[in-house]
Length: 76
Length: 138
Image (cartoon, each protein chain N blue to C red):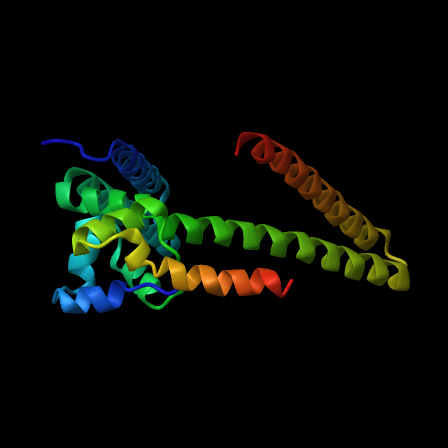
């Protein structure tokens, strides 16, 4: 799933380890989220959104991702 | 001195005790190089676990790693895939053993194949039971 984690982390001049420490996960989790290999849980998304001061909807590009998912369902 | 990870502390103590008992027993009967490796590994791992369980920062890091949601998913997927691979391996090996046993007319090899099919059947049964359990719980 596409997210804005990397973009917001770089805007806030944070390292992956610093962000990981703030949300109590390993830096590998942050790396996987940034590479779109892992979808964060609702609670982790909320923690990340709080760190960056944005909504979960904005952080996780929910509108964009929903549209993509909708297309997949329509093609079934 | 405070113990931050009781489970690791107990594991460390157990390994150290096992290493020391091995050392004492082997001192009486005579040591060879395999014993040195085993005792060395037990004492090293036991000591390491004890030190980790007594360190606040290391214990915290290890607990965070255990609680990390991605790590939990990786463990879950890993176990699930390993189980599937084991099931397929059992079936393939069973077929090979039964065919080889028939061709060579060796009943022992056929029994090995039958044993593997039995293991596969148990794994299927376990699979169904755990599926019913989680289907009702989640």
